[in-house]
Length: 121
Image (cartoon, helix red, strand yellow):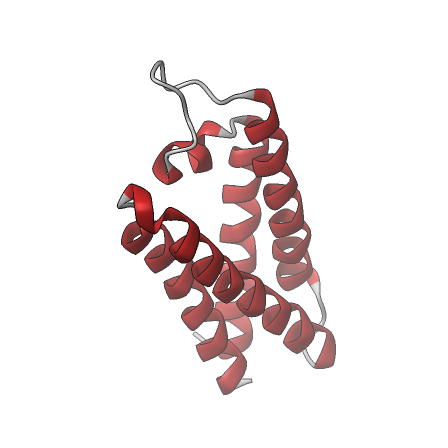
């Protein structure tokens, strides 16, 4: 698969996951430990998680639909930067809960995959 094809696939995957989180914030909130004892998401947490999902959906759509060239490179770079920032922020914030490695590791892996696509473009 070409770098452009891989970036587009990453975009579609990001968009699909983001739509799932928008519909059901628990998809992201639960692995982060942002649910109560009954595994419910508090309204302020749901709002925040949906904000992250909306950002990611927009970037995923941009990656999936941007024409090859500068637009796709910019969308991929923005996605990678967001994933790597999430890895650092969630890693630092979730360390006391013992969830940092899992959550920040997933974000870092997505960031690295996007950087790999970008490097091959």
